[in-house]
Image: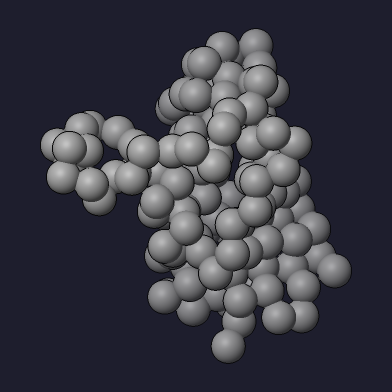
Length: 133
């Protein structure tokens, strides 16, 4: 199994480092454009959440991203240094009262763009899985 890891300080401008990481993975593992687009949006959204909500934009706290390539899937593991969150009780971003809110769509997007989303360690760790068909 191939595995690549990166760690960034919790600054929103570091999202571009994550985008480069994903671009490099696309080249290295010959990912097709469909899966690449889904990965780019879901992973950057997850890292952004880890920076903003997990680590509260505290640049002394890091967000780590691991990529694991297996035979039938590519898995991204995002970890922050925050306290976690209750991922079972999130407001539905598609509910009429939430449609005009500026945030709240990140996890919805991750669940819709990934083949599998797992929350671990009280929500401090997010696994995004994308299957090869």
